[in-house]
Image 1 (tube, rainbow, N blue to C red):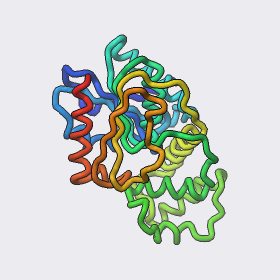
Image 2 (tube, one colour):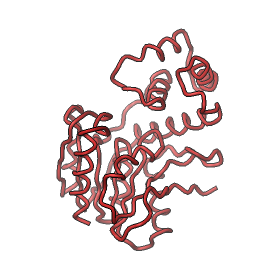
Image 3 (cartoon, rainbow, N blue to C red):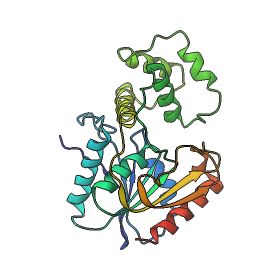
Image 4 (cartoon, helix red, strand yellow):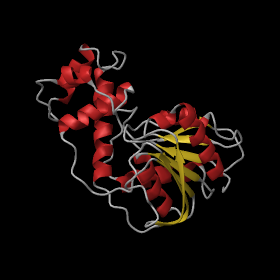
Length: 263
């Protein structure tokens, strides 16, 4: 089955369409609060990871494969038309690979460090990240309820389904998500993490790039000037997560709208 990754977040508009690439969760719906604050006359699409909402789609474990899939989907819908790309976190890495493959589109990254190959997190750490991301909890805060629910568990890839069922029974994970959905979305999260941790950027993006960083995010690793010749750096209030709320979101939308003036 060929995945259909494009989700119209706002299909109407005469401007250059903006494509927002999913973070490690695989979902593009985290971009909805931003879309509501962007200039009205611009189509905006989310890009969702294969397997996130369809059990017949295979999750991919390569940034290069994800980039090729997404570019093919865009080309099928808007052949030969100019586009702009935006990605938060891992989405910025996939966006970079897409941009360097398709010419000179505007690329906007949001709190995206330059990727470096590194070992995979342990199954315990990966499951912890998945559960925190799923519940929308503050990842920098103490996760006492989650830690207590996982205490004493032996976590490996063969026991993930049972562990997820236990977290649901303990009320840590929302009960409205059935076990099949949870297991599939964990598999997508894991595949995306493998892709990110194994990716080594090559070549360069010859077009314009705008990097947006939270003032409270770690300062290291977000200088893309070694890979892109035309980089503009912006900062907005907040960290990797809080920049999507309140004053941070207002400033983020303003930065993205300024960048989109180039298209």
